[in-house]
Image (cartoon, rainbow, N blue to C red; front, top):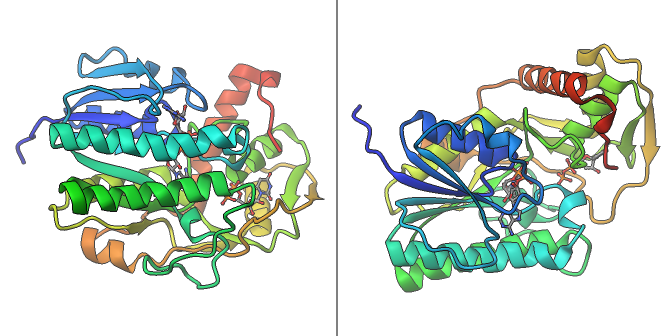
Length: 325
Ligand code: NAD
Ligand code: UDP
């Protein structure tokens, strides 16, 4: 198939998902502009791309307007880990809301397609299981997760209002827990925490009883879904759930990681953070139908890749790597 070379903007492009996305887009022959304020992202994540003339990195905060001529925008800028998005909650809400306004304004001006990295957190602590896109959620608007959850909900509202009011071509992906190489080693998310703790022989910090569930999607699968969603015709706006429907208790995840690493770390119990959802799993019927997409990488295979990544990182950096908990 002949390539149509596009100019693609990736906000949050130096983060975990963003850097993998930039790689995929450069490899496909597109011109990529990576925009990031490096709050949780790292220059290292995109260092290998700097040698490509098709790739450009710009330090910029999406809460300020951006002027660029592009054909497509992937809006990923926003810290994703509870530890990081709760560090400066006001900035988190600003990033989601003002960042969305700025990217939608840009898309409107240059007639670009724009994809929003939304989240399963829009469902809050769900009372419907598994979660389908028509479930309206159970979010506490006042709690410590609200800056992220409500920020992302308003961003979705803005996407659909710009679509209706200004005919902007929008795509909204609701991402469920995604993991893989290049997660920040101390960002506090469960997969990176458990792997780093296991590899270092430190205690595994299980919050609550560990019976809460999540469903973990490997980064490559998630990005296949992103690219397919962006390629859909203009009638497809979403929201579309993207995630792996293989649900697992967090305690079982800890045991899997101990097994795969061969670690002798102990599991210790810590209080469950406020508003931590008890059950989460995507219904991906819509993604299957609209995108002909479903995850292919098994949890053991994806964890294996991620463990190998952190093993290399810890060998290179050793004690500098701390775990946020
Ligand atoms: P990440 O923290 O690695 O990446 C976020 C990136 O955004 C970082 O590079 C960070 O520096 C940048 N950023 C933050 N605020 C910014 C601002 N104001 N201006 C410019 N850049 C800014 O997290 P991730 O896992 O790669 O998540 C990427 C996106 O996907 C986020 O929007 C997140 O909400 C969404 N998401 C991720 C998951 C997941 O499991 N990984 C799940 C649901 C949603
Ligand atoms: N969790 C845990 N130990 C950790 C980090 C997280 O038990 O060291 C739990 C957390 O309480 C939640 C689940 O793992 O129930 C997933 O947490 P994460 O922060 O990765 O993402 P969330 O889905 O909560 O946004």
